[in-house]
Structures are given as structure tokens and as C-alpha cells.
Length: 287
Image (cartoon, rainbow, N blue to C red; front, side, top):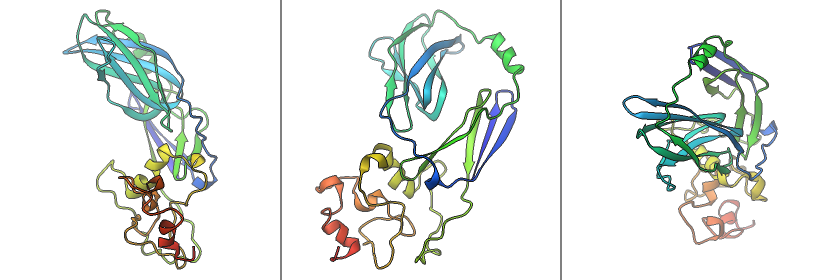
């Protein structure tokens, strides 16, 4: 179950209740192996305050991150902080620019799969001041109340990620909140008491499940893996995972249960010889 909250520049807010969903029943978002298309790059403002600041906007054909590399030469030795929010309408501020200078910049956007696109170099002159438009401010004051425009999309990304896509009728700061409504009961399992909520030490930090599955699937999506051991599952029956094979609290199997991300002499960075020592460690000698 999820809820989308948002607030526009005038302080008007809205909430959209998205309802319930089951991740495994969502359609898969396929990786097209192409970076997002970048277009309509504009220097919308150049202001002089304590420092000189420029605001650059651009659009992409799919939700993607925002970054600008810039400099006074072709080496592009400076960059803006990476904005990991996946959006189609991008706006980035460049602070601390020098006045009466010519800067070259290029914008960069990555989609949810990490496919990247870098624009050709663009030029801006900080001597050509472009103040914020009063007409735009007036238009914003007369705009309608913020809200969702169109249909909210839900797609499955890899094994354990879900993408929720929405657009709003005006520019807003938005957030998504979700919660588990009901978990499926697994047959022949008695781990209810041991399946505690995963601990995350600090706001904004990822938990062991996310680091052990989602991060891996960012570069190795299920569509590319072929035949592979399932993850996000628990050992059943007489299967016992050795203590040397790390699992998430409650015994959940992740990618790092069988693969050592810090290095291994085995194929696929496995913790043992594939189809022999590795598999038999849990499934027994009869495997």
C-alpha cells in the first residue's frame, strides 16, 4: 500500500492514496540498455548575489537522475551534486561561478538501470545576467492546486524492486510512503517468530536485504542472469545454511549468501566451487 504526498512552491499540498499492490504480480520493467534521451537544455537563470549562480534545466524521455559537469575549459573539472531523484523535468543550480566568464557545461542523466547519457557541451556567459522571470512567478500564483495528473504506473524492476511512476500538474516536492499490509503465509515454515523487521542503523541507510539483493540487481538484473538460485527466500525442510554463508536476519538468502563481493578465486565470485562445494554446503552431498 502506498501514498504520494506533495507540496508546491506556494505551500499548497496534496495526498494521493495509491491503494494496494502485490510486487510479484506487477509487469516487469525491461531494461532497453539505452540511456535516456536528453533535450531542451536551457540556462533559465543567471543571478549575481554574494556569488554568481546559474540555473540549468533540461528534459528527458524517461525518469532519470540529474548531474552537470562544468568548467572554464574542456576538462569539465567541476560538477554539481548528483540528484538521485528519477524525474523527467530536471533543474540544477550551479553555485560559486565567477562573473564575466565563459563556462562550458554538459548535463548527464542515468535511468533506473544505470544506463547513462551525456549531452554535447553547451556554453554560457555569466556576464549575460538572466534574472528570474516575474511573469513566471505570476503564472505560478495563478496555477491550479497541485495534484496527480494522469495514471500512476507500477512496474517491477529485477527481483525485489518496484518502481512507482507519477506526474503532477505543477512543479512540486513530493515523497512516497509505503507499508506492508499483509504478508503471504509460506507453507511448511515455522519462522514467524524469527522473521523480525530488518534493522537499519540510521535514517537514509540501507538495510542488509537491500544491500544484498537490490544493489546487485542494479547491475545484474534478473533478465540477464538466466538460471540462478532464487534470493529473498528462506531455507526449507532439511536445508541448513552454514554460518559462514551470510544471511539476512531471520535466515533470508541474498546474493551475498553465495557470492563474496570482496573477491573470490572461484567463478562468479562464489564462496565455493559452483555445483559442488557451494551447492552441497546447504543441500547436502546427495545434491
